[in-house]
Amino acid sequence: MSKFSIIPDGKDLQSLGRDLKFYPVENDSPKTLSKEQIAHYNTQGYIAPLDVFSKDQIESIRKYFDELLEKVVAEGGNSYSISSAHLKYGPVYDILTEPRIVAYVSDLLGQDVIAWGSHFFCKMPHDGKTVAWHQDASYWPLSPSKAATVWLAVDDADQENACMKFVAGSHHFGHMTYRESDSAEHNVLNQSIDNAEQYGQVVYDVLKAGQVSIHSDLLLHGSEANLSPRRRCGLTLRYCSASVRAGMQWNEKGIHVRGSDSTGHWSNNPRPERVF
Image (cartoon, rainbow, N blue to C red):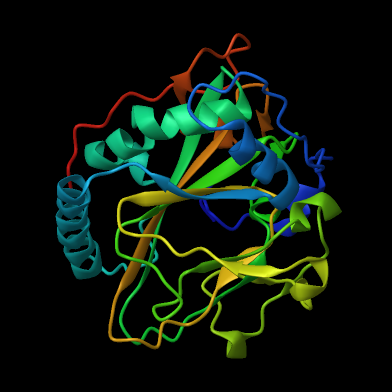
């Protein structure tokens, strides 16, 4: 298994002795988000929708992804296999370091921010795969739990084409016990949390192409199978405070997108020249 796998072994994660509790944002003077949005993140675990890219800009990103996906599939990959893309492709690095996105994240994670992950989750038309209820923190060898995911809608995402869904407020319950997914679930990942609805109200993350949502690494989320004739592509962008420690050499995936890392724990990868 690659040291940069998105699904590290559960025993490896347990051995890290991680601090997995939610740390509320303390920011009385946000520069981009409103105080109400920060309060919503603290209580509900997410913010959505947030505008980032214009219609022309997201059309350009979509065209790029279409060409990238075509090449990846021709090489034996699929619509879910484009992971750690910022380490390979310059245009994805540009999205991960986009100042408008970093500004949102910095209001939540502080003035020293690391970007470390980028993964396309593209549900093709009539795609029968689900993403079971899970917490991002279960997959990430990071501690403490001061990390967040930005989900960029490359296509319009709604209930018809299986947009993401959250269990609002579930991040307050800490790290949850999960089971290994059964093959009959057709889960894109490999973990499932049962009876997730007991932890809060289910809300759907409806986004227009070019918009983003942000959610805590402890928030329960997932998505249903896309049974529609429309594609639903999203790009997940991962960030954490520079004070977070990474196991399994995941710190080597880092980019310093705001402030600095005084400890030198996180790498600061340069923009790759490769386009495809």
